[in-house]
Length: 264
Image (tube, rainbow, N blue to C red; front, top):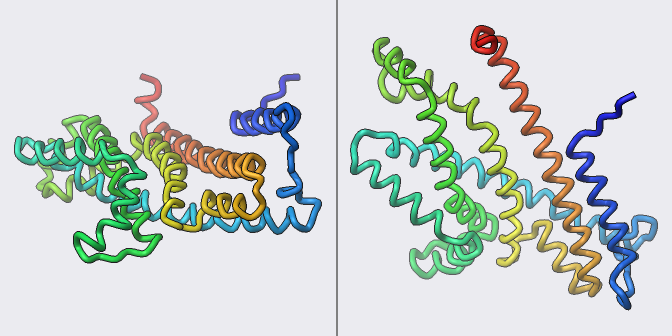
């Protein structure tokens, strides 16, 4: 009898095995897993405190990815234009903001905007804005590639129906392009979940910030940051699972709607 174990579950088992192996290594280091021991009251309190940053991580990631997708879509449109000046705007934006490190952008947004523009953003807003700005060039390239992958006949058919440019994009082109770009968009959301940890440097209370604060109190950095790794691992495996389910669902619908393409 064949036993099939899903890839996310396999990754989790491997990670837990490595954690067990790690606990037995380290030479003279005395491990203090009591700080995250769920059988002890202090460990339960610490775990609850660490998990308290989960909502902050998810909220920031979702809002930032939605903003970056919106900005990326708008930036991608000049990139597929026949006007060389519009294409130049797209190339300039992508080249500039793709080159700025996320951490630097977070620090500049939080500390620089109040000085330069007189805009005093809170921790959440500054983190979201910085993450969205840094991610938008990648989103723009994803949308541009997805739109350009649609057959020119679809554009010509939409134009022959008398649709305006925006009607064509909204009703004909983008719905087809979205199916093709779901996998890279899912990857970008995973990337956003990881990059959101950088917002902890300005004091935003996410998973990483909670772990850093607990390290200061307990002075057990290795154990606490190992637990933090497992938190991100579990979160990202769950997100990856649902992204793949959505991707498979869209592929199934496409096969049902176009069975001839599948046989071809």
